[in-house]
Length: 258
Image 1 (cartoon, rainbow, N blue to C red):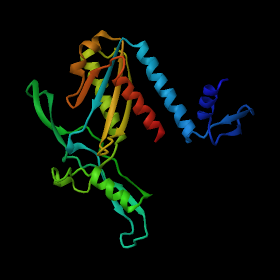
Image 2 (image 1 turned 180 degrees about the horizontal axis):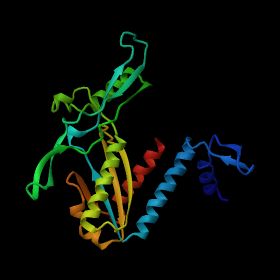
Image 3 (image 1 turned 90 degrees about the vertical axis):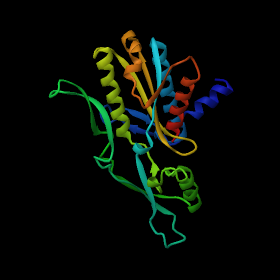
Image 4 (image 1 turned 180 degrees about the vertical axis):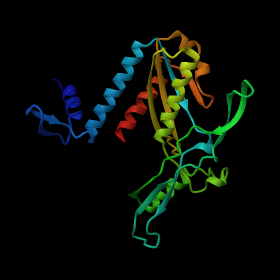
């Protein structure tokens, strides 16, 4: 083992692993913690390898960027728990459920009454049950800088969103993938096989939540109908050999590090 291999070996070896006994076999096993930098680096490497392998096995690969209209961005608020105590650094992040009726969109639906496709106003396909809060410690300077950068008000452009900040709604992402698979079944057939890798992240400047999606397939039907399958609010590119693929692997690694 040369110097480079030695560095790579120790960089991926868990810092806090321990030996445990398998309760079913009685064997002594080494169990990594799964949370230290080495474990996170190993997880990121495994994910990147899986994505690279799937890309090499697929005839078509697409990179899709689902994005939010400003109105639909999941919103949270941040409050100082003890505002009268200058020495307190305890804050609370609060997420309240979206109200159905406040998020409408026009959709083409088939009317049995009129026996034709009509436009109908429906609730947007979003999560309406996100309801949680948690406490965290942060300096007042950090919170002030965060408010300036992440405020959804955008310096007065959206005054109704003053003191609101975006967060990643996992269910929004799940609903998007379900709709995508539904569209694939509709336009390309329900027996067409696809592989999807879906990640989320925050923007580097305004911490705006957004998603990235890799779609792999060997189906000519899916490739032919991909523009119909893709939703209007999602930018799409066919995957080149480098560039976009490198970006998604970087997102995977950054996500694992967090």
